[in-house]
Amino acid sequence: MWPTDKALGVRVSATDYIPHGLPIEDVCDFVAAVRDLGCDFVDVSGGGVAAAQQIALTPGYQVDYATAIKKTVGLPTFAVGLITNPTQANEIITSGRADGIALARAFLRNPRWVWDAAEELGAEVFCPPRCAPAPGPVAGLGVCEPPSLTSRFDRHSALRPTDKRFLRKFMRRSGGRASRLRI
Image 1 (spheres, helix red, strand yellow):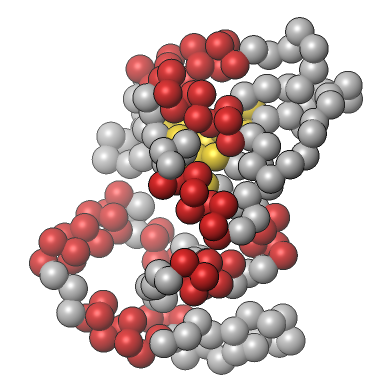
Image 2 (cartoon, rainbow, N blue to C red):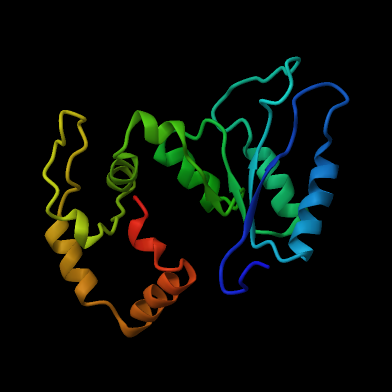
């Protein structure tokens, strides 16, 4: 039994990229069924399961599957598939094609992806206080301290009461594990 105060998600393969393979309609039916059982979100991927698959690798090549599932099922949806730059990621979310994105290889190529994205898009990223003393670069890995840490801490200490309630609720829902998440 999964606790009702914690989010539960599922990752699905929306296609297997082979003729007469898995149709998106079947995937939508499956996602609707898990939604009805209490699933809170879906992470939509695809392929990589059949030797005969033919995948045209282009930027965002799997986003349309996430969009189809989101529109059909109405569950919060995360998209994947060669989402490599901040502008592309922002467009996917702001256009409503997906509610979020999931990155993997982009983080392997650039562990500072979030800070670089924030700089490119004119946004700011909260840095956990326990990361503040970390010098950069670290052991030649090129992982540098994010800019303007001091000002971020000043703003964090002056959070509105509603922000503080949100953070406490988030920490409870994550079972306290949120403090170990990497940005």
